Length: 188
Image (cartoon, rainbow, N blue to C red; front, side):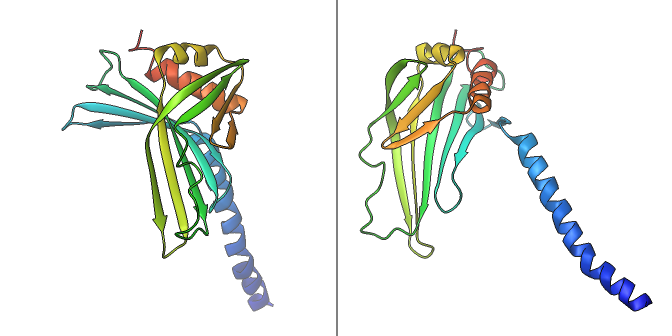
């Protein structure tokens, strides 16, 4: 009887620990959602701030949108730069598979009822052949005028190529907070 009890406990204990671990990981992910990461580089005397706003889809097919800001020094003293980074990861492509976003030279931003074309820069793509997948990324530098419009926005939708990315209310709120905390303080 003792052995049956201990066997049951030993059998159920790992599954309970796995469930508790999974819940803790989900809680940690939800609490870290939209948290800014700040990194200071002493060599270049530059501070970089990053916040992941959207992660749409699951691996191996995912689109990610991140907000980035950079300024000289540890504290902002002069206007810095603000941009959105778009990344796409897909599984299963070959060398003959066309890149989805290679020919996209601009980004269409729909802020409330107004539409803006924003030029994309630094497009890159990487094909991984051992584990068949491809990663594409591009960034769009956001002007001070668009930053002000984003802070007042009630709705935001971005079209990167044929992929529409709608910002949820929490993601839009996080973007506004990011701009207010890390960008507008030094780009007025």
